[in-house]
Image (cartoon, rainbow, N blue to C red; front, side, top):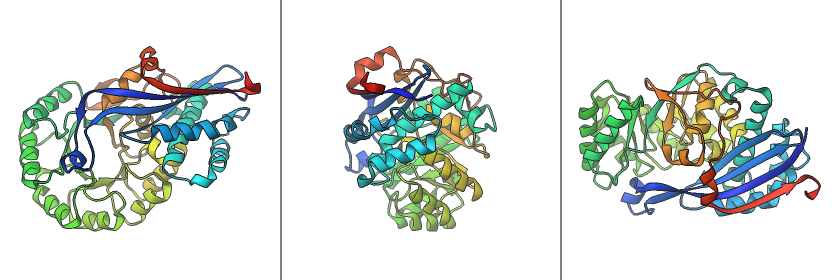
Length: 374
């Protein structure tokens, strides 16, 4: 079996409504109105197809697409079962641009497609191929808790999420006025009650003293975690915060290399590590990080792309959380099943996903490579 063809697509998936987090509230970014997605469709000489994808917000996917246009042809003729070997060949094809950031985020789409393909050949869901510990994982909602929404809307969305089977609620914080964050947080806690798991996400907006002050102010609320209280690369600061607070610390989603995430583990800077498959370069590097996190007795709560992460969370020894954000759902024909606070691992082979017909309407560019040029 060899790779017969590969097709890359660049898509712009619109959001129903622009959203704003602390980076917008503090003037660092504009509201988010769409998710840009790089898709990879690999077909083998025996007719099996694998689907993978990566993504960016606001900027980056054109650069990812340019990279796979240059290195993607190296896939042709390779044995797709040799995922590590294939991944290394693509790294070397683009070695001059490094092993993190845009380059490996582009390779993530390929790597995910290779794992999808391998699981399909085995006739197993990806979680089962990796070795599942459970058939469902805990799920919390983020998309209803953004800062552009008035608190009445946030609490209403929380009610809807919980009624729909979601198990926890996360809201955004990190506004210029911390008192407003505390007011909104207290309102949500009062609305959902003390027994519903509640998380907050500051999106890197605080300095060390501010983060410590916030953490001490919310200790009595029993939060599951405080997410990204500091700059994503401030591993030492996160370690100090984790040691000073009873409330767990979560971070890692913005880091785009295994060494960056390992530094968080080594410094005991997090209680919940949050790697993101597309950002860290694919499932192959993600599994390296997850193994080290488990060795350090940490929880892993992967960021975004629930369509991939439900499988990886199910194959992690510790029962952690998957983030429910429905923004990419329109790109696929299938839907994930959520009930009783958990999201079920799809029983279909591979990721259990196929591109929806409307994906063509959002496609901005496409390139294909074929064996023997055909």
